Length: 243
Image (cartoon, rainbow, N blue to C red):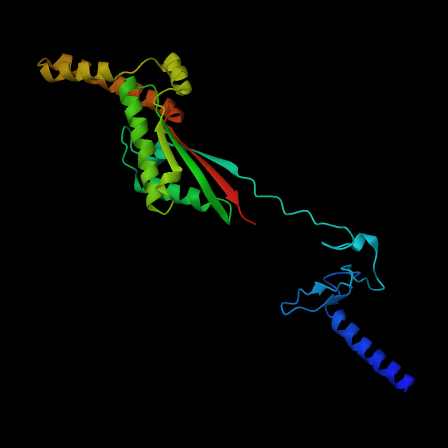
């Protein structure tokens, strides 16, 4: 009778161990019960202690067993991503209407954000060169920043997390260097020569004024091209990458 009971107990024990063995890889060194998802759980004794198997080693300690508590995954850290885009790529000269090319460029920038990232906030800052008055440049920079904001909002980014502002010519560092090298704005001179040309009736004077006008326009074009780096829109995107 005793032998029969012992034999049944051994069979039951073997069956139990067999069921645990299927999930032993998830918790090396511990006896585990298989779970429906395959993850299983560590078997605990009547005192709440985790049951070891014959392969247990101290460095196998798992969360909630033998005094070991796993450290939680670190919280995602927001990062700032900055895009500096020349307004030549976004707007026509002196315009605040976003071009089709500019729209595609902005779409590309947003598509290049890290995968599985969420946008926490976005700041759009418009800048101009030093050509024109302070008031005009301030308004132009504001209008351009808001044009970018409106487009980004239209493609799904929440309007209330986007801040748009203009800085005018406050960061026009390159413009000063260009003026030193190429001279000041020629637009007022161009306007004056054009007026003289319209009024002139003498052929030689017209030829001279046309030559002067051509030179001034060339110099103005060179000056505008030199100042191009100051005409920009800066987009600062605060994102959190999700694991």
